[in-house]
Length: 267
Image (cartoon, rainbow, N blue to C red; front, side):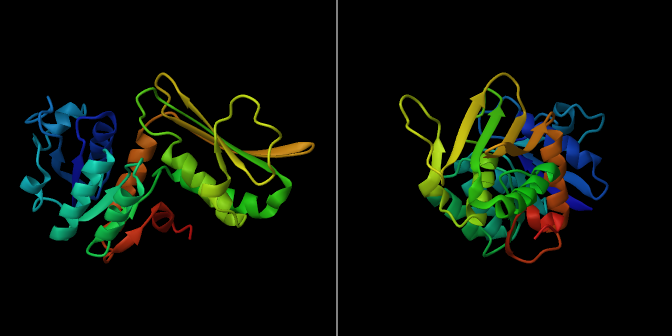
């Protein structure tokens, strides 16, 4: 059995990850971590996730359980993920990273950890979303510069980064396929007298409301027709299943940086 640690264990995604680990035939939850001061410390992680089985008590320091697991799954916050990646690199522990919202230096620090251990990092671990990534590359290459491209995304009211990491990944895939630099052509929202749309821009629209788990649509619009590639998540379990699939896959891999496209064999 592959021993898994989940950090952010008391959060919505953390609890879903614990359930997904429990449902995977080749994985076992060996550690659960929360931030210092969390009300969930010392609580059994299985009970917190609504499972009928006991797992492990939640602790507040990754280093206290660093010898207890093979792969850490982290869907927390950029600063915490950087520290966790560095700890895993020092100890040779593998890591699945689903955190988004990194700045350039934080992302570089996480990527650097892959020099010492195997690390799978993705903006979205849903199998369906990763299939959409592949379809977007194909659509952009076929439709080319004859279409206007707009990306819309919607998430729950608690999400702190915008646009979502998934939307940015979608934009980068499309831009790369068209030979554009997303940093130069992205338009993040419009207001007032914006003038006519420039042909090479890629627009982003963001919604934050209620309990929306995650909706993404990329529109390729031409005169007389449009193609839309959409993914709508109704449960966090779609992300959690992908993350535990990645953890099982990563367990046999040498040091290096991987993503969900590698896990699914889509590259």
